[in-house]
Length: 247
Length: 342
Image 1 (tube, rainbow over the protein chains, first blue to last red):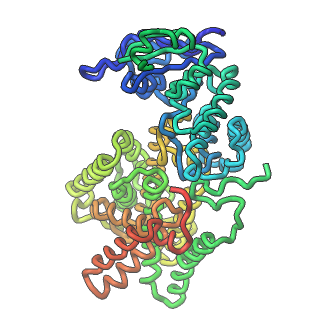
Image 2 (cartoon, chains in turn brown, cyan):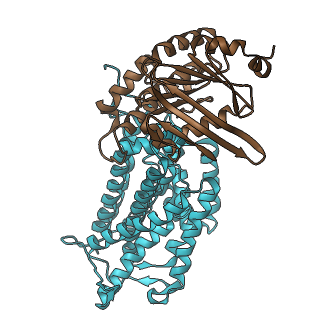
Image 3 (cartoon, chains in turn green, yellow):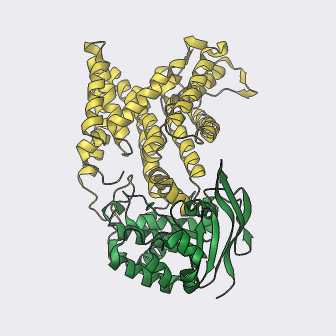
């Protein structure tokens, strides 16, 4: 396992009386899947929002590589190489799968104030978008409107959207949710190969998948990281059993 | 890659891969032909009134093409596009006024050359929209509608209370502005200028919406979180679209003042903003040729029904109700078939 690609140190976020994030420090190293688990209301969503850039922390720093990205917005972070998928799929439903992925390829090539050349015949956008879809085994759905896709396929499109950005780090928010056993198995397999290209911070409820996939696990309870370690250590940690696994 | 490119691509141009002469294409060509041939026929019959009426349709349609770029393609429901239409009109009026008097306006001589007037109208409308958009686009939904209305009303009251240029009485243009090599006083020649401007605004919108900028604007309308997550900030994209939209509407306004030989605060009033919105909705929101279909229908109802009863707007209301309830993509959706995207 290599150096740290994405790191947070001393993150705090408070909403009125609620301490949603309390002194969270985490990092993501090259080649690994780092899973973040925790019961409902533990502050996972708030933490993701801070990492992705839609929410500013009250205190603390976030680094992507050597670069401090704490003050940057969502779009800027994405261009610097932070790819993410959403818990509830976030795609333009009337547009084709290909169009949804192409917009990332477009962003990667600089500004979008190009008013003349049509995009639908632009090989510099089509080729990377198709390549990302191929990774997700979705090329046959390229011209289908997202609205006609199954839940599982939408999840795959989201990951393709992130991959086309050539990300340095991936943030996947419950990618297995609602997938069914077959879909979960397929995605698990895919993430296992993918992590060697780009490290993944995985927020997931499916414990089997987490214990199988994760190189390291952090447990978030009431805004704080209460435990940290590999699958075995987390499985045996009495505080985790207490707070989360519930037995 | 043998697969044809996506036919669900956003909106404006013909879906490449389908035959060019499909139903939608036929309807669009028919609308343009009607728009062009009706005034030519009227001219041959010596009915100047109808030639001028066609110029009015073309200019109102062009103003609505501008608004459609904001509302239909950009999802920015501006209730203040009369501000740009009126500003364009006042640029034509004020410039002609000073050219006629031989006096200066802000240190510059007036001009009765349409090319100069158009350039000034487009630039000033762009600047105004840049300022208004930069503030308004920080809000969304009803707030955006209200703040654009508020800015337009400010322009309206400003023109109303500024005595130098006629105040509420308006400002006459004694001699129609000139275009080198063309007799602009000739009704059909003037119509052809308006028609050309309309066609260019349609072509520009079509091209724009198929470009990278158009792809980003479409995504900003459909899902701005996706756009930002892909690495593109929605705000600058929207702002530029808003500015281009205002420029198109402003150019239509400059020509409209020359058509009437008169500019008054009514060009800036919220009634006109509302009319443009009605035309966009009637024609089909986010459909390239919607504004043209909407403007033809609107002006025909106004002229034909308005001649019969002063309550013609009651019937306009019924038609609008029908469109909103039963034909969400407007007259164009009904004539040319629905498109599959939002």
